[in-house]
Image (cartoon, rainbow, N blue to C red):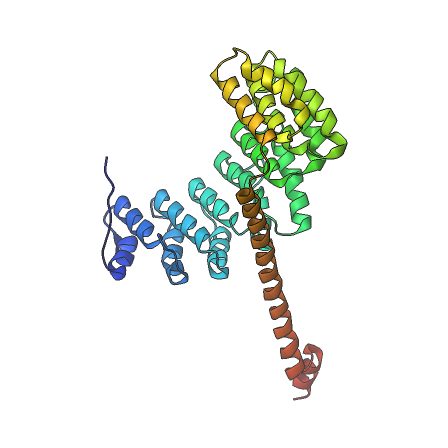
Length: 329
């Protein structure tokens, strides 16, 4: 019914975030400080995040703000909080999600992978599986993530986890998962998330060697008795982008099968007919360049650390020589 704006000096906001009389007052303070998060605010968010007596929503928001800062100090704060142990599952889930925003961090990627298995609470595992779809810490970690996420997409994983896994498989675009996803999409499995698998086929089936097979299978599922499977197949054909599917999609579009089928078919036809949106293509290119830039920054940090160690060794001699010298003294 209303929005509440807090317009007070920064020092008062910091004090309110630490000692406000109610959880709402402390949450408002954290949110206001974090509207334009800066490196100088990291210590405030760290104190809130690590305070086990604080209300979970306030700590959760502090973790989210740290994820938005995107500096090495913010990353280390999140990693330290995770290593120190977080009892509240909602707060831990928020920390994992925040770590997932550090796309090319090897440390963050390894940490998130620890929580992507069935032994974890539902919210924690779901957050980890969802985060893995974004993370690109190293080729080896990406490969491990693909295996973990694919297993999570299968039963007996929990429904929320499987839903997150399908989203991550789409983001990872692991073409090696094609056969497994095709198996999950089969009608005989009687799977409540079959539509998710069918939709994913449209993305993974773009490879030339499986494109024709994918189009044939999806076209057959346009007339599946399961309405959800029909709609998923329509959308998947649009994502597949094969002009040979236009005739089938036009028939679905003009048939009296309901508003949901009509709109999905219309979107799929538009996706096939229109050329790639230059803005979208430019945005994807910028994202890729941004990822490469972050990877370069990580490499530069590692190189600087190694150079500093070599310089220190050159100035003071090798560790072995220094030990020998000390022994003589």
